[in-house]
Every structure is written in C-alpha cells, then in structure tokens.
Length: 133
Image 1 (tube, one colour):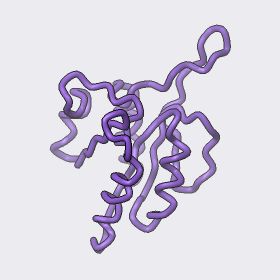
Image 2 (cartoon, rainbow, N blue to C red; image 1 turned 180 degrees about the horizontal axis):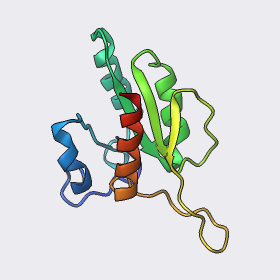
Image 3 (cartoon, helix red, strand yellow; image 1 turned 135 degrees about the horizontal axis):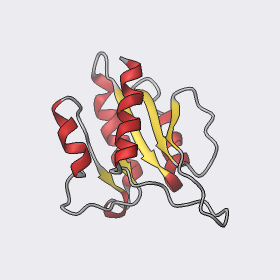
Image 4 (cartoon, rainbow, N blue to C red; image 1 turned 180 degrees about the vertical axis):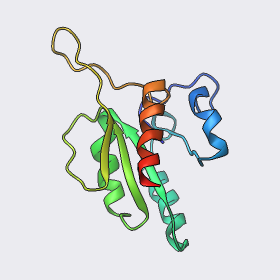
C-alpha cells in the first residue's frame, strides 16, 4: 500500500485491513512520512527480485497513481497488479486496475480519493485480488 494521504490514527495499518493480515501480507508506506517514497518502493520491489515466483500487488490512489505506475513498469516481472483508487489520470496498463472510482462532488469538482482504509476500498481490493486466484 502506497498511501499518499498517510492518515492513520495509530501509525499502523488501518483497522479495516488488520483482520486481513492473517491471509495477506500488507506493507503500508505513508508518503508524507517518507519523502523518498519512490526509492523505498523501488528497494522493496528489488528485494523480491530473487524470489522464484513473487506475487506482489501494489495499491495506491489519487495524485500519485501515475508515479506508482511509472515505478512499477521497472518491475513488471515482479508485480502482478497495480490496484488504484480514484486515479487522477487515465489508466492504460494491462497490469493496472481501477478498483474504486468515487462520485464527483455536486459542483462537478472531483472529490478527493477515498482513503485506502475506507471499507469500500478494502472490499474492492480484496474482491479484485480474489479474481486473480
């Protein structure tokens, strides 16, 4: 999870994800707390390059979606999918899936992306991951 908002009450993963950690390995990176987040993600992905059959799914949202896609392109052999919540730019990659698209505000402004801990995000991410199995 690459969280551009980085909003968490207790500096851990959001409560909505905790029940899933018994079957999913969840790594949460809060972008505001990691100014060099791209190099951190690059290092994490590179760390898995020696694994025989890595299965990595990257989740992110909003304003950094395009940056995340650029980063993942360098590791396409390691990443099964990129799951995006409310990306600001169109997505045209075979490995990328928009899992949540929020409604626009009444005055046609695009609303901010749903937080990655939002129950709708959790539901749609898990539902999408289950289609890969």
